[in-house]
Image 1 (cartoon, rainbow, N blue to C red):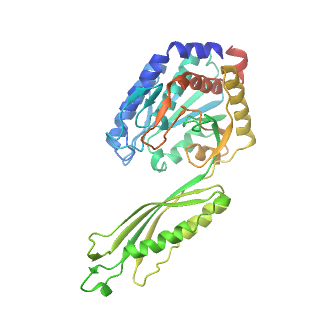
Image 2: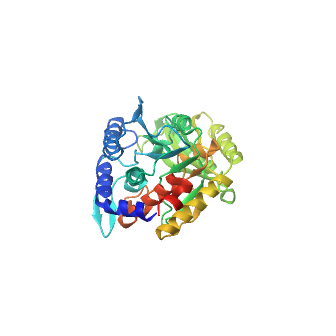
Image 3: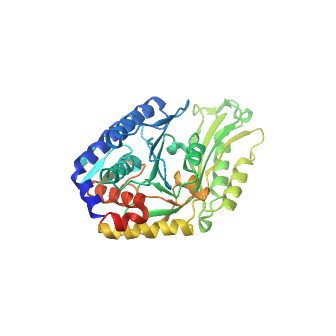
Length: 381
């Protein structure tokens, strides 16, 4: 792997520059215009570094999804990454200090995308891509559950020999991700009856009081011993302090490790019943991502990644994590999937989100070795 790592090290400044350029193209998931502008920047990087254009999957509500491919024969390796972020415009600034690069989406997961591009470029420039078919799937809505891209990912990843997800490494340990919880999102709208809080409160039916009852019930669904979490992360209600609230809303996040738990949680939430007479509940949502489990095939992928990492001078393990990714979808289709191959750092979805600059090259080399497959040891020394 030394020649691959040396090539990437020679271009370390270019790789970092591409990461900064992509991060500066801010891309909040629900701002289609901004996400598409970021997608255009990503397309220009692919064109400049790999000489390939995107097959654009046009969307109306979310940003357009981008598919890039190299080679027409041989087993398919699919690399997956998203370019939308959780950050609104101006929330975070790009800055570099103490060996860390900070910025919106730099860790989750724009650096990983750029590292993957350069991993393949290294193989391309070193003449190591013969007999390889590589597909990049870059989607625009992962941070909101991939509602418009999950089927698209499944169609384009079908038949892959391996799926490499360049989401961030496990924070702290820099390990890979071999299993993930399934995830769900639900919204509950509570409708009551408004009334004056002082003159005639008895005529009101408080949606906020009902909201409190429902939050208590929902959090009772947690079963940590089974790996199940239910979190009411958003709770809004009422209009004035002197008005009995006639409206409230809840946003619920769920995480499960099994289909049985997914069904239990789904049934409980979708069948919520009012506590107060006269309240009307409306529930929408679903268990969007199935659990990602380690399989014998993904275990072999992990072992191969460990061998490559050892050649590169570092070590990785496989960990199970609570967050979901688009790797959940490919794993559920029976495709060998390994996650967490992206950048190292900390602060996913936090204001201190950053990557470790010194690890950019070795992590890109790791991806290159995984793309190269069993030829990594024999052809890339």
